[in-house]
Image 1: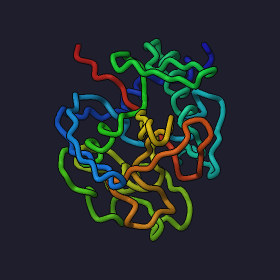
Image 2: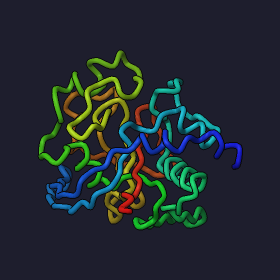
Image 3: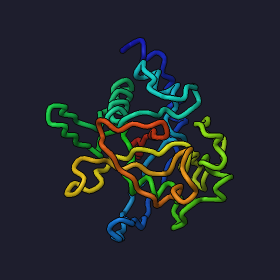
Length: 234
């Protein structure tokens, strides 16, 4: 663990994050036609999806199908993303956000912990829309890698235009895991992912599109994650 710690530049980690202001976001589920509002407290979100370089520096593993240090890590399950968050928290001396019982597959999240975690889907959508109600934050070709422009492969982070809050690749390139269970009464422990990927049609690459799958077994080559850090108010 000490070897890993020495290789982590805390300033580089700090520079990854953008402060997201507080506000309200309108959510909807096209399957159930439900619409609801969520209050969002200010938080910090990584400006890029977690890259393979960062993921490998923490876990000493790289599960990705497309290899490259500046590419988003992908082919990763929800539980692997959560484990990364806990490992990064421990390395940097932060309180871990997730408690994991592998025997029962029960995971609880402490939102007051000062470690790293996945965004809630309300936080994700609010950050993606940058406080607006728009389904996209610009012309899709200018802001996202998707089926029409990705050359059928993953692309390095940060090449497209960011949204108004300075967040890159919120749409396209890789879908991004969120903390939330989708609908426990219907889908059990399935977790939410958002944003669209490099092989998706234009109609799927929107701030409001919701997908879900199994947190322990589902992993594909256009699904990654980005991370949240509790806002330091000191």
